[in-house]
Image: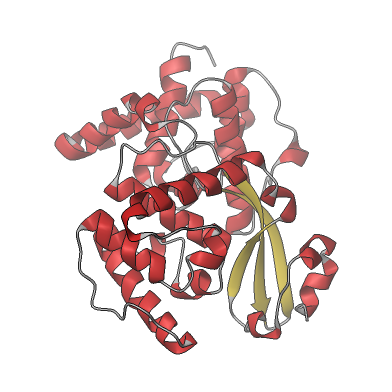
Length: 321
């Protein structure tokens, strides 16, 4: 039986949902749209990780044939983390019941999260999402694990998917579409130069960050001023993507169709849509040569915001307003 709200979306009826997968009130979930599931880049990324895991665990005669079906219970994650991190996890080798499988997965993910040193708010996976065989969460987890333990690994770049965000509110189900990046926009070895500038700035000259912001602030206001806009806070005013899109249009000499983005975004999903469009414009214009996750802009990550502005500033700093 399918959750009733999914019947309004015919594309979802190709997936088997059970009553146990009904979304509880107050819960939020996101699903990859079926149109994106057939994306060759997404399929290539899945194949890449299956080959990587199978090669890594070849001596243990472990073979992964499906990331969704083979990773959820913690068995393969257990072996993978122990192999990559030279760790010894205190968990059962074989967990036969659903309760024990879930407990094992919880212990493993706790260890993984500690290794990655990520704040809980930054995690793009959970025990619940991995255990219910969610492909998007599983891929995010594998990208993070591979990037941490084998940063030289050539993970397929520029993989993004269309997702539907679903929230069970007191008034029923609320749905929104958005675009989500799974991997960065370029190969790591091609994208270090701009990122290194700000890595060094943050690490060795944090006292100069405010001065850099001031330079960018004057640059931005010089170009958006003719639109009747003014930016006073770089940390917050670029989070919804609106001013960034208008700035890109001003600098590159074209009008961004108001129907292509949300001029007054009212949700994180709409903000991510705007930020994703801005990143696409920067990539298409050859301005951005580093992996940028649009969600980092929305989450007001200072380094990401400064990096984007630097790309525009370095190209158009002499352009007349």
